[in-house]
Image (cartoon, rainbow, N blue to C red):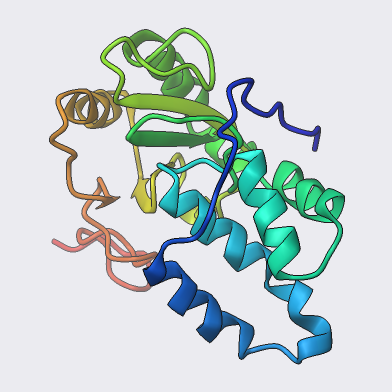
Length: 201
């Protein structure tokens, strides 16, 4: 995976708010003092949540100080994993899985719809200012392909019609309910099939 580009407009300072400082105390208790740097990933996630879903360089430096670890080590982790955003994203952040199972089942059509409905380029915030999208590697819901992740929610078993409806709901700030769009619960068979794959009458 290539390193991600950081945002060119950076705040000078970052500090965790009181709520997150309490959460950090809880997180750090999970690790021996000598291994507290193991908390770097949950702390990056907290920083992202606090800062409108992206992590500035000042937050990485602050986390490095809190965990007594080199800043470059925090930077390497933040730039490697796709779940961390290093530049502002839309209020509705759409991640389109384009790994093989999703691609075979039409993820390329979802990407095309994102380009048409949201913005022509990845990581570009929509004209309305409330949406952005990127392509990502496997999100772990292959059985429900194709699928997308919007913020923390999964939208699964998609096609062009329901993807269009989902994207338009985001543009209008009225997100549709997440889950399977073929009426499945988790990875269960569709209602018209029994557990052995036979059709119901």
